Each structure stands twice: as C-alpha cells, then as structure tokens.
Image (cartoon, rainbow, N blue to C red; front, side):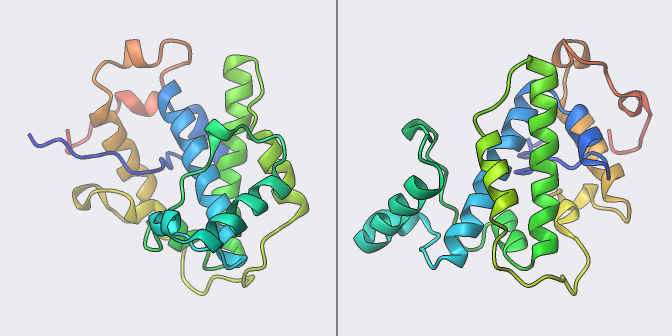
Length: 199
C-alpha cells in the first residue's frame, strides 16, 4: 500500500485540548511548530512582507522580515527562525482569510503549548509568541463567511467524511504502527481501539 504523507496539522477533536492530548510526542511538537509558523506568516502577510520561499531573493523584504522578527520577538533564538510559507500553503491561506480562522489555529496552538507543559514539565519558548499574539491581534476581517473546512481539506480524499474528526482519527490510527510504543508516556485514547472499515 502506498504511503500517504500525514497532514501538516492534526485535528483529532473539536476541543483543542483533547486534540492535543491525543497526539503522540512527535506529532504534538510538530503541531506546535507548524501552527506557530502559520500564525507568524499571517503577521508577515498583513505587514506586506513577502510570504514565499523566494524571500531570499528580495533584499528589501529580507530586511523588513528580520526587523519585524527582532521587534516582535527580541529573544527569539536564530535557530528557531520560522519557515516562510508559499502563498498557497493550506494553513496559511486558511488563517489569513479572517480572524475566526486565525483564532481557530491559535486555539490549537495554545492547547498544544499547555499539553507540552503538562507532558514534559517545562514550558516552550513559543509561549512568548502566544502572549504577544494575545496583545496584538492581526488586522483581519472578523467573520468568515464560509464554514471552517481546513480540518477536512488536510485529509486524504478517502478519509474525508461529514465528520472530519472521525476521518482524522481513522487516518491517525493507520499511521501509528505500535500504539503501546508510540503512546509510551500518555494514555492511549479509547477511540484508538474502535474498529473501522478504513484499516
């Protein structure tokens, strides 16, 4: 069977905190890092800074980019420089449409940070980003006229259903080869043992 790449973010429950709790360690860290990159890219976008991997070829945007990052996150380590997304990245396109969408990603980002602290007994440097965003919401339209469809669109076609949470859980179970090993320091979710026809 051909391997299918996992989505750039996992949404395993309507409650962001439960969704974060269901993630194994590596996916929890990945969700946090990707969501932080998505949120930062929205700020680059609203400040007119080129959001593309072509950024390296535009000196003026490079200067604006580093000035912005230094002003906003003066203690940000250089090795944690955020990834600059292409314009058509699904999370970036979704988050920049309106404040509702942005806050949806932010809620999963915050839940991931809380779970990280509970699970590893230490706080992430990305807490600084969360606090800054709370004080400086981006200038985006307030209301999204379309339904929140990102959790559905990130899934492979065969796992898309009316209930995107159900599809995401079925796909997640497929990628976890050995739950006893993968969930070594957290409780295995009950839904992990439910049978489904997509396995």
